[in-house]
Amino acid sequence: MTTYDDRASLTDLTATVERVRGSVEGVIEGKPEVVRLALTVLLAEGHLLIEDVPGVGKTMLAKALARSIDCSVRRIQFTPDLLPSDITGVSIWDQQRRDFEFKPGAIFAQIVIGDEINRASPKTQSALLESMEERQVTIDGQTYELPSPFMVVATQNPVEMEGTYPLPEAQRDRFMARVSVGYPSVEAELQMLDIHGGVSPLEDLQPVAHAHEIVKLVEAVRGVHVSEPVRRYAVELVAATRTHPDLRLGASPRATLHLLRAAKASAALAGREYALPDDVQALAVAVLAHRLLPTAQAQLNRRTAEQVVLEILQHTPVPAAPGQQSGFGGLGRTIPAYPQQPPRSL
Image (cartoon, rainbow, N blue to C red; front, side):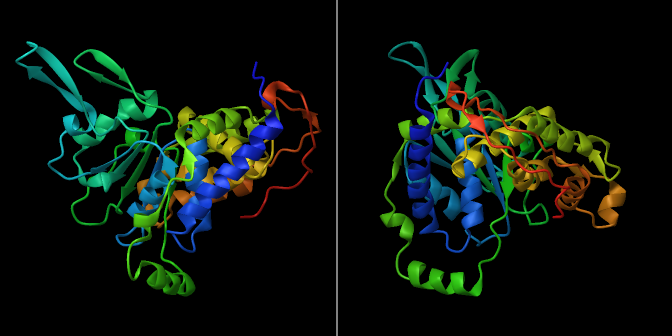
């Protein structure tokens, strides 16, 4: 049973996250919701996929998040000639020792930035599968543990762009959430010209949190309470994707787990010891849409996976439950009831 004081943990979490958020937002102007989602995925022990057209700050966001935390960072530029061993590492024969010596690849870091991940071949993309799910790498029959915290922040261009390979379903399913940065507003773009016009703000960016602080915050997020009605709500949302007529591939049980973890992180970021249906609703599109495959007819009708998830949210009843005991920190504090409400129109 956890013995730390949960109030102090939430206070520390809020203060640390605000420092990291302020540091990243000093580089990425006018996108607070994107920065918040990146921090949510970090605290939920997930991996983030940033998809958008070139030049909107995908790599800048990944670098700003990595540099704001005092931990090991490696960047991989995915290209068509990149080999799996360039990512995982390789065993090299040492003539002096007359034995093989393992040379770790770029995956052996706490935050790994995969730039333009869909420009590499599927064979190379699959080199990330074991590390993203099991946080380990197996080379020549030997298993190597990866450091903690461990997060992959990958960027990709839309599949319509030249020279891209679509990510396999198994690869997309390992990313907790997908986010699009989007074009900035006029005001944000004017501010960007002032800030980025001379030197890059990344050059002066200093770490505002340590890796061991992030590990403690992740442990605190694990203790956020999720009531049975909220868990059932998440399961019903995911199950609805498996029977929807516009989808030929629904979300996996891993998606349910990712949705629950993200909801707990979102609740902790809001200073709550318990998750609400609103946390699940707010993250459903980011967590589920990239895992879904529309049918051919849906594609002809220009129906996107995001639209399907929004439709499912509208038709799935939102639970209402009485007050119950909190499991956060093992202290059994009473959780206030969330009010009864009809399905929210999104």
